[in-house]
Image (tube, rainbow, N blue to C red):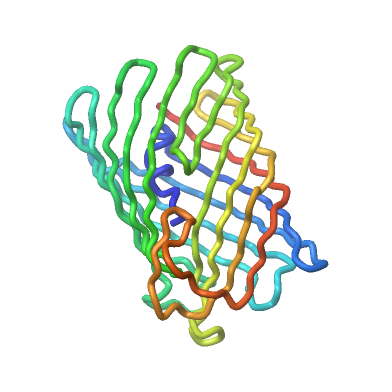
Length: 284
């Protein structure tokens, strides 16, 4: 996972299927490179009773690094299985525990080192018909160390025209709704993830990816239950760091390291254009 696990589980509770494609440009030395990200998530309601619900998500991610140095490889993959237990404390309050296990590697040779794990919780309150908030904390065992992700979950709709939703500071979004089908606004998106390379060919080296992206968004609902979203903006920061297999397990809060951090073998750090296109299925 990226630390957007909680977002994929909760911030868009009505989405059963999400398919997204993103392209980012960057430059290092005199070389122009780009990344292409294909991301699919399928939500599966597993079990539901009056007071609690069990939800599962199956995901696949492909990150293609094009015109990068040879040591970075070409295609990286993420295969994830997520689950959540949502307990309804009252008509306005709920408590959720979530977990994920995922394989993140170049799939050249697979071992236990290629797996990452995440877990956490969220407490959610519906304050009124216009405002719901949630407070949560997630822990992720990344290849670069231990990652702590505190987050605040917001769903605020002061009127029929405006909405402020998402997780702060991970993925907040402000939209103006022209009508029931068309909306436009802005979104801030953050990502911190890591992928393991082959043990045979690259001695379990790994790549750490950090991104902060600002987007202008357009969302359009069509065919009753389908939604198309388009985003255009910039990566304020995109960092791709290549490391030897970590001997220590440092800690970070979101993307900020605590204490001394390891030195990468190679680092590409730049901003650039970001374009995203996605489609989602919302049957409810």
